[in-house]
Length: 182
Image (cartoon, rainbow, N blue to C red):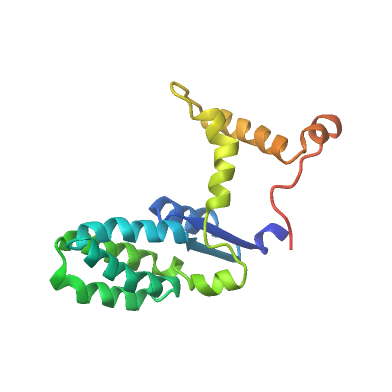
């Protein structure tokens, strides 16, 4: 099974269900990695520091120190920075929430600078755009309800059309591969 030995990278927004999916559903894949999408990591930090810090200037200062650490994948150092900030925090519950978020996702937070230099994906923008093109535009209108089977079927047909495989499928009964092999 070539597909189980090829490299697979899953980019996610940090949601728990994604790490559960990664561990359980992709358990048989040998060479796999899960990464927290850079955009969503920064967004989470930005949102929570807004509740942690006392004003914009304090937030800008903390983010100015936190983001470079996370950009290099230095989660342990980021956690130390946040702990050192505890005395200045206006909301320690939100500080704890951010620390827990980073701790739980530490295995999935990489050196984004190095990944970027290696021309590897650090964001899920392409996948989110694909979801918009394949699923959302057709299936997410007011009052619409879909079963898993019909939603999957529509997504498969839309993918076929976007990949210019429509004619090949209907005339030659060929389906384009969903993944490429290295």
